[in-house]
View 1 (cartoon, helix red, strand yellow):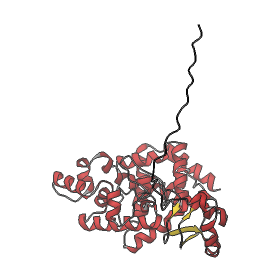
View 2: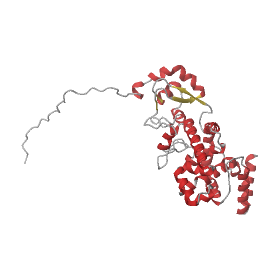
View 3: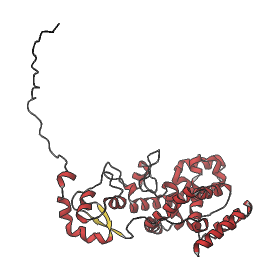
View 4: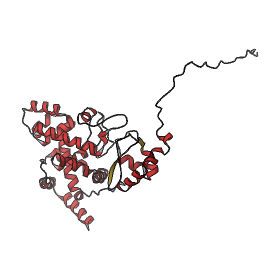
Length: 324
């Protein structure tokens, strides 16, 4: 019955004149229970059309809906802790398409796309082993804290979102050039193209994540644990050791712990596990640490320096007459 209603809705929309379709979208945006303004214009409509252009685009939205089910609790907890509007939970959809391992051409990484400098300013650790830009909870808390700072500085949520993408100096320069009016759409043309695009994309993301059914989009169910929890590890471990001893798919561990770049969890760091495996790990942590340790954790801590150089072997040659 639901599928029939969806097809009927799509058919009715398709028969509407373009202006009438735009009116429908405008009304839907106005009904969103948001604090942040969600105005309608042709730029927003184009961003919505990008999500619904063809079956491939709709499939990508279905995947993002599936990923959102996994990440949304962390997003909302971080935003609630800073008393921020919950519609900001859709900003990572714009920044990274909800891909935890996303890295852009400037090197920004993670769901919220932090650059290294911005990450360290927000207290996130970035080393060869650990990249907390990819830690779901820590990066979400850092993003919420930064968004709160930007809003306090600019006094406008759309400008704060633009500054989250392009940096506060970029938005401040645009404000100066536009006459100082704190209105994103009056500053719009003074912003770099990539920065100005993030606000209409954000509005479109809120629209499509609310009205996806009306566009015939189905969420994709992903093979991710519905519940998980963290444990503190007392020895350096490899995710491969945990997978083998605790009978957890390695791919699942990598999805749950994307911050560990080399698949190594340092001592005294946290490890996220499927909830039903937490007690298994606690009871067998020593077994995990010793399991094939030579294979997973072989690192030389001391190396002897040779006292004398060994001489290379001399080659023996035999003189032979060349045959005519």
